Length: 312
Image (cartoon, rainbow, N blue to C red; front, side, top):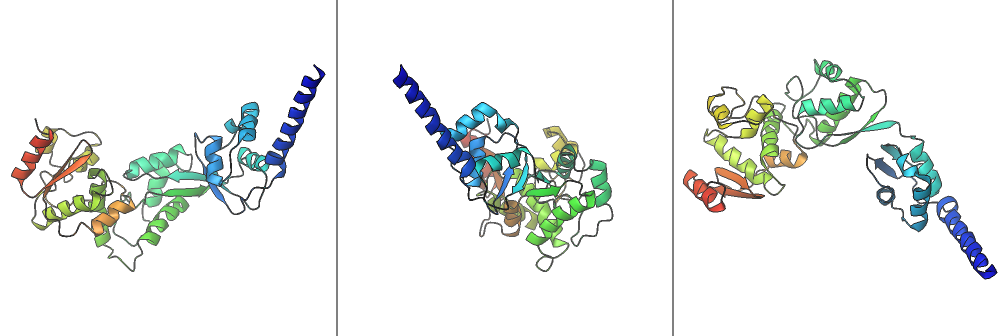
């Protein structure tokens, strides 16, 4: 019995030594490392972002303390090498002074402003007021549809609506500098890119879909995109909508581009609008079961729809 007690005590001592070394004493190489903690991140995922090894000591620590539930979302920059214990303390005590604003590809300005409001950064009304009279090089609409570049932004607590807008629009100008693009042509590029964003399923198809739309524009053929009228109506469209609705966003009835972008396209869609697939002369496409079919003629288009099972 005494031997069993000794073994248990030895095990506890060894575990304590191992835990202390791993979690408290050993400095981790995190100097100048940045980490973004988002809702739902698990300890092993946070460790991976920081390049740390997640082992049994860490697992037991979080199981006993439940401190993983106390970690707060935010952006963190570590100024020096510190222990795992100090790292967790910093993440729990929320030394982050910034809020993460992520704009996904294809979000409309309305959706972006809703997210800004939900994060407590500014109200939609405040942001729209800030957009009025905002001095910006490129042609744009009042709500800057198309120019809110999909990226992750770090917004400091207390920044004004104008400062938030400055951060987003300056990012666009850095990616698409004024000395490289015409001020009016960029608006057309973004309008086409926004339609490509909504119509293409993957990066491989974006340049091809862009080429199809550009081919149609060259011969004054309607773009015939359901997504454009969906933007205007803010709901799914019906065949009757496409036949009867006279909105300029109904590209079944009106030729050319829509009056404005229909979302904020990502960089891949913008690049596709600038650089469509070369020597690609097709005028029709449709997507079915994660595959995109292209055709030169309407007859070929209908045949492919029948053969694929898309058209019954």
